[in-house]
Image (cartoon, rainbow, N blue to C red; front, side, top):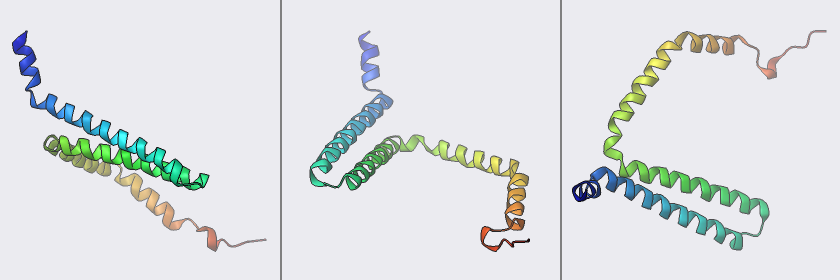
Length: 117
């Protein structure tokens, strides 16, 4: 039992998960503190709403970035998989994409419609 606990504690993946969770908790704490501070600083309701939304989005982005940095060496195969999947989808949909592009080229635009009476 003791060997299993030691093996689990010294596992690098567990350390990375703990690091990612701590980073996310720090980002959440800072984001909530910033949102509450904006309530005191910004008096206009619309501007305050937009600023809080921006801080919230920025918090999500920084948390995603932190998790990406922690697991960066494990993401090499994932980028290759996304590239291959994207190429496969583009190849499979090439006729559909060409049809949509042709339709857009021959359809009349809204500014050049002629009125026939």
